[in-house]
Length: 407
Image: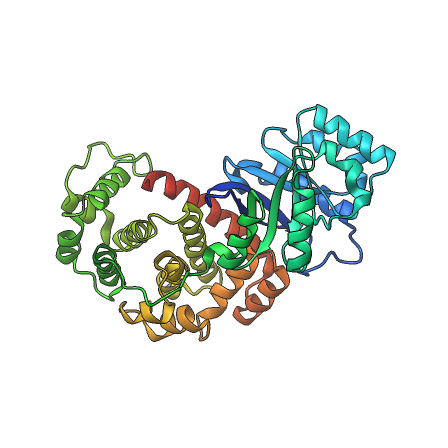
């Protein structure tokens, strides 16, 4: 049986990464299939987390939120997980029976952090609160007036930390901040804050010019060297990268020119596009760059899986550049004009249409846990859904490794 696993980041009030919630299904159907109940689904994801994939592969060194049903709480399944790495998320369907309260008290005393999912301020759930450290509120499920009123009444209740989920816009994030939420989950981070016509800074324009050079059909190494060498940060990253254990060179490289020569055309395209994008995203939450890297590699791997290797460089850039608008707070339509990209790439980035768009759309749907939509886009490309989980985990591992050598 295939188990599809993705992760969704959770941030603190300063937009720093706090943890990942693990999203999972037994198939690409968007709901649990009739033949598999939620107990079996939880069992399946635990088997993958503990035995097949490994927690480190999925969440790196971050904490993981994992859903648990009444059955798994009563049978003490969470005890299989390391308490310092996992947060036990109690599904909204779990009722505070005496058996559940005893199980939650035991887990809390054992040092586990418990979270209550999709809390709707129902008084019947109050008996659970002494054992719960985090309460999740669906920001789209409660109207704003009720939410403000209820938070005023409840936020001082016990020693609770509040998590707002399904935060989709910057405005919703600001409202959640004002209401006292400490953690935030949703897709607000990858939206540009376009409050006025913004001018791209000169330093960012230089980096866009560098990106433009590596996007050209033929690379001009001299031009790239002339742009990289004066930039202390890029030069340092290049030399650090080429001298890392990733390459295991016998002799240390101390010249920008030699480093570029050693990397070769494909290596230069990959490194410069990644490093320049990382510089552009400076000042933004680190997860934005990390997500760009995962998308880049995943789009590339999907192309290679269906024998479309010729398109893989373009698709790598498609994933990497898909969040440039959020990094620069400039509309994507304005950005693609400044880069010498193919028309197909521009269409996919700015309008999410054209021949290349399904690769990106499938990738974005998958990372958000919308496995059904992902499968629909994959079918256009004639890619089997099982390919997605393999490419996703490879992309996550690659991004973590590349980032460690880049920073």
